[in-house]
Each structure stands twice: as structure tokens, then as C-alpha cells.
Figure 1 (spheres, protein in one colour):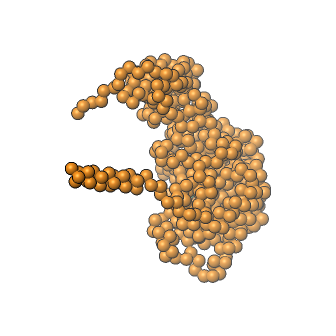
Figure 2 (cartoon, rainbow, N blue to C red):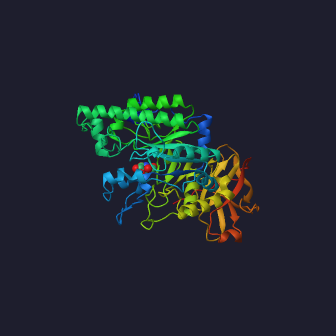
Figure 3 (spheres, rainbow, N blue to C red):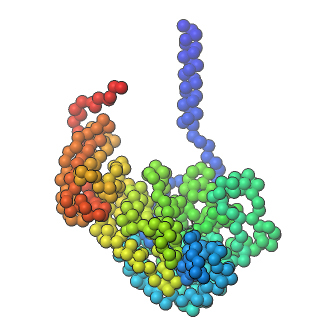
Length: 508
Ligand code: FHN
């Protein structure tokens, strides 16, 4: 008997120590340059950002002149990386600006097109990795001021888009191949480089003392340019950084962190995503404790998260190309699959259903024209947004679980069912979860097809073992072959329910 008591006690101790170990809180790593806030920003600027739903990205620079081709040869790589394609000499590339004369550029027409597409914010490349500045920076000669065109392109963009009510964010590349002090220490995203960096065995990116000193000049130059952008274009809402994976930049985490504070101090409300800086251990986006660095997660480039859980509750956006991987203008779009307006709308709503914004990239040509294919895409998306935009703007993820027919978003008690995979039987089965309140259930009331304003028929489909209700909504003929995603807006309500016996589990 005693033996049994002892072993029961032992078992209890083992179980409780295992449980304790499991629930024990992970020690937080003290960080000086990790996230400076746990949880989301709650101010009005960021609230506005959260409500955008859809944005436009524009990659434009001197790389638009070759457009991925040179001397009859075509690069399969990204057009904005053409300087490194091997098809053009560095010297030729670095002199392209002398021909940059985009006489067809009409910022107002671009802004109108973006507005008609339904974009609420836009991101413009002030300077890509080649270092060419689309504004007349006083800190370098490699700028628009020294082209035949001469006029400040950033100013025209900021003014025109702001006038259309579209918020502007300025893209700025940390990588700058044109600056003599710029040094690349490799990409911290590479596991081997990151490990070496953390072990202290990484090669010093600076080969000489002089190189290290020149990098200090580069830092000052970068800082000056950023302040110059904020001075010149005070209407902008945020800075969109790129290329900060560079180890030379990562090594300067403390300095970069301080720069971020200075920029925010100068420009209240400034929004900066997670591509600006790393913590002192080289962690980007999420710091060593898993907290988001800066205001929103910028990890989603050309891909979307698969679930709301994957986003970890962070604010985020996804930037998407129309071809597979072309941001700048590439003359030959036959190289990869080209997304259709349908694809892009579906991706946008998918992003919105997981609390993200979706940003579609455009790459105008060397004369300042948006290519006809992109104009058609903007038009197609705009037509859908004009009718169904309610399902995209100012919404958040809904209480419904992800269902096979598409995505759902929510605003107050309205849930938008965006249907992209219409069921073969033309009956939409909608699963509504049980309320978390005991004795209550969610019920759907009033369902409307938002493009026609017609009321949808809602048939009760019964409930399952979890207490979730099913509704069957017949899809009318006009939506059965429309070839487009459509939206049904339903109103959801919590009501008391009378329990009628338990569901019996299968006995197997
Ligand atoms: O190398 C760039 C690329 O050219 C493009 O600008 C994208 C946009 O997010 N960012 C970099 C790759 O992540």
C-alpha cells in the first residue's frame, strides 16, 4: 500500500514538474535594439494605415531605359537589378542617367489611375540599389537634376497622389552601389552568414581602416538623404526601406536604431516597417524575443501568409509583382506567368482576410508610360473595387473560419463573404462558429449580393457537434458564370439558444 502511495506521489511530482516546465515562461533576452513596443501601435496614423486594404508600389529609375535588354540580349533577372546582369558594363549603366528624359511622365495621370484602381496608399522608389535619386538630392550628383529631364520626380509624385487622397510612402534603398563608401558585408538572411555573425566569426566587411571610415561617410550620407526627404516632402506618411539585410548595416544596429528615433522625432506619426533595422544579434523583422521590430511586418514579398496564425497578430502588408519577379520595367513580359486582375483581387482579399494590406507593383517605362498591360490590370481591379471595395477597406479578419469558397472580412456586425471558388452545386455553404458566450449562438440575418443589391436567400443548414451553424445560400444565375469573384454581405447577430440534447460522438 505504502509502495503504491510513494509511486503515486512520484508520478504526481514528475507530471507536475513536466507541466511546470511546459508552462514556464521563456526567459526574455535583454535587448537594447530590439522592438521598442510590444503589441501594435494604437495611434491614428497607424489606424489609418490598417484601413488602406489596397496599395500601389512604383519601381521607377534609370533601369527603365534598358528595360531588361541590352544590345539584343535579354536578362531573365529582375529589370531593376540590370546593372548586375552582366549584359551591360557598369560604366555604361552608370551613364544611363544622361539619357533619362521621361517626357511622357504625367504624375497626375498615374495618380488618377491608382485612385481608379482603388489604391489608398502608394510607395515610390526614391532611390533603388543603383543609387540613382529621383529627387534632386544635394548630397550627390547622381540625381534627376543632372538628367535631361531635370525636374523633381518625387515632388510630382507626392503632390499628385496626395491631391488624389492617396497616402505616399517613400521607398529608400540602404544598398547604394553608387556611393564610394558603401560596402556590402553579405546578406544576413543567409543562415551561414547569420551564424558567423552571431558567433563573432564573420569576416569583417571592411577590409581596411580606410574602408571602415568611408562607411562612416556613407552613414552620414544616408542620414542626410533621409532628413532631406522628410524636409522636402513633409506630406509623406512613412519610409519604406529595402536592402537592410546587408551585414555592414546590421553591424550598425545601435546607430540605425538611433537614426530611426531621430526620424520619428522629426516627423510625428512616421510609419516605418520591419525592413529598416535589426536587433543587436542580427535578427530582422522579429527580434530575439519574437517581438516585431518597428511598426509593421514587411516580410511578405511576392507571397502571402497561409493563415492568420502565421501573421502572429502583427500588422503587415504584402508587396506583389505582376510578373513572377519584375519590379522595374522589363520589355519582355513573356518570360513568366503574368497575374490577371482576378488573381490580384483574390490575393488582395486574402490578405485583408488575415488583417494585411496588399500592394501591387507597377514598373513604368523609360519615357514615363505605364505599360498597357498594367493599365488594363489597374482598370480590371478598379472595376471590381468600385463595386466590392466595402469588403476590402477598413475591414479585419472575420469570426468565420477559412472556408473553401473564398475569404471573409468583417466590419462591425457585417461580414463580407468574398466568393472566388464557387461551389459546383451553386449553393454556398457558410459555416458560422458557435459564440464564445454560453447559451448564445451567432445567426446570420440579411444577406445581400453587393454588386446587385439583391437579397440572398438564407437556408438553415443545421448545426454540427461544435455548435457551429451552417447556412446554405443559393447562388443566383447571374453569379453562376460571371467569371468574377463576388461578395455577399451578411449581418451577424448573437442570440440565446435553447439546448436540445448533445451531439453524439462516433464510437469507433
Ligand atoms: O532587391 C529588391 C527588389 O529589386 C525590389 O525592390 C523588392 C521590393 O520589395 N525589394 C528587394 C528585394 O527584396
